[in-house]
Image (cartoon, rainbow, N blue to C red; front, side, top):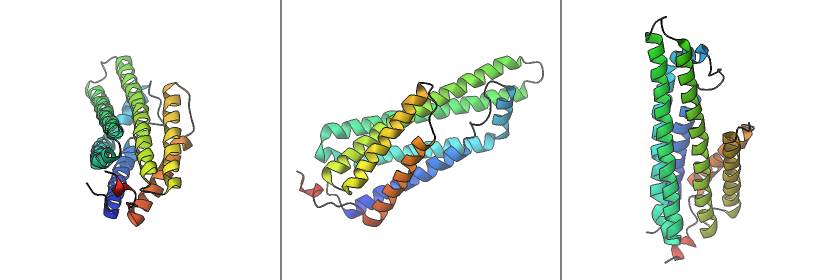
Length: 228
């Protein structure tokens, strides 16, 4: 399958769609800034049910687009290295499953909050706060696990782009470094080590630069199309 400059621009559009939908989901998630081991957390969830539902929808859409990216680039990576292609797609599929599970956990949290509101004053509030806190922790761990899988998949993609010179070398190396930092940040958070949000924001700066490059210049296909 021949690769063209338009293929690069299409990949840029897919990444842009994934970033917009994923960013919208993150902005509307509303799961931070409140103590999760109190009734205030349940009330907070209740007050933002509509936004959270929209966040879940957009996050799932973003994950579908991300899986579409893995499917789109699969035949091209396979042309270079079959094992790398299978590994990249496999990581993308695992990440998709993790994202779906994390959103199911969020849906469960919405259900717990709604049940709490409908149960009246006779309920034991501690039971609901413990359950809500447990669901939040499950979402928290799945979120950072997702980031780690995302960074591994990203590293595979940028390694492929580096080897076949479809984009400038400096941009591929930047992507590899940005992915490594995200992986480190996710691993530290899962080890209960709080890290700066900048460890994740820096990847956003790279992704936007990567998207702009693809949309403007597409792929440099001269070397790639020489592969058998």
